[in-house]
Image (cartoon, rainbow, N blue to C red; front, side, top):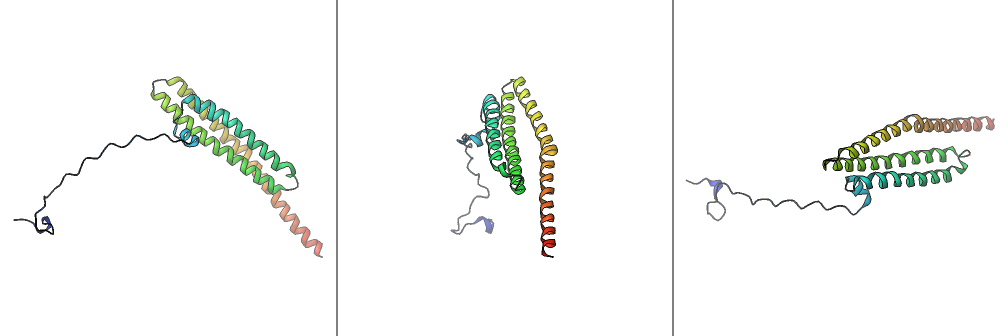
Length: 170
């Protein structure tokens, strides 16, 4: 006796269980053509990730951000809002670049250690940890106090302008 559910619309009984076709192996992951993505994934060698992408690009980015901040801050004493925006952009770029560089070097060091070479992979990771500790310290004890000081200056300017506005009217 066949079950009503086992009969197709044509009236021919269908088998109770059909085995699906085997899945093919996944294609190998193609390396990205983008420098930023390749570094982030740790696809570069440890030497390239550390010395070129982290150190040389970091120095270049630091010089560029410093020059831009200096150009923006030419008249910062008269315009503290400009100074605060420049400070925020500078520290944001430093933080974003550092995170990108650290992740790429960390992944490249992990891949390097998988080849059985422990010393340089461990050394790279140790310097990266020290660098991130230094960045954390700089953000906590330099960037945040600078920004809060500038914010106090701005708040004082707003209060003093409002006070001057009200007293000059009388």
